[in-house]
Length: 186
Image (cartoon, rainbow, N blue to C red; front, side):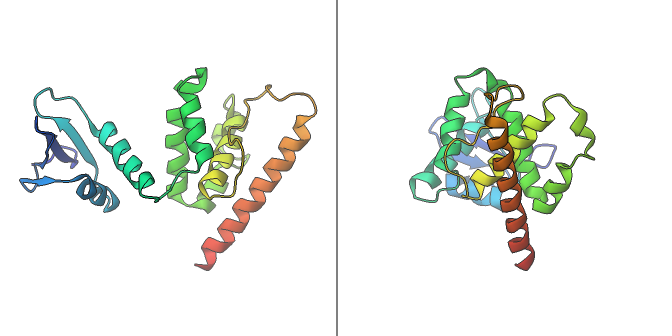
């Protein structure tokens, strides 16, 4: 018994046990993680209130993997995520992350194509700043970045920093090309 979109429905009982409505048995967080790794969409709801608890449980799965030493997110990314909850940028962070992960899933070569000047989104206000942040995010995700990964928005750079930003952008592009080359060889 899954939801109409084919999403696997997991119900949380008052005892906090998780019930798989498709197989009529109880599941653990590791089972849910496995379903997701296998490509399933999962929705977790509270049986009594009907509240969607999916986000809460997905964050718990990530936290448990990080606690076991299975680090996926560099400390700089985690720090900036925490920081984003206390800044005005909070409203754009979820969209930015969703777009960045979608680009990661499409493959690096596709990502580079999407960031070229021929992209129809290039005329969108703030596109260059978003593109620079995406490149910095990709660098952070590949473990090649140290320091703060957030790129300043257009017009926020102090005088004289444009050259260093251009150098950093060139370095990021070089690292992306190197990574693409490595991926091609695999």
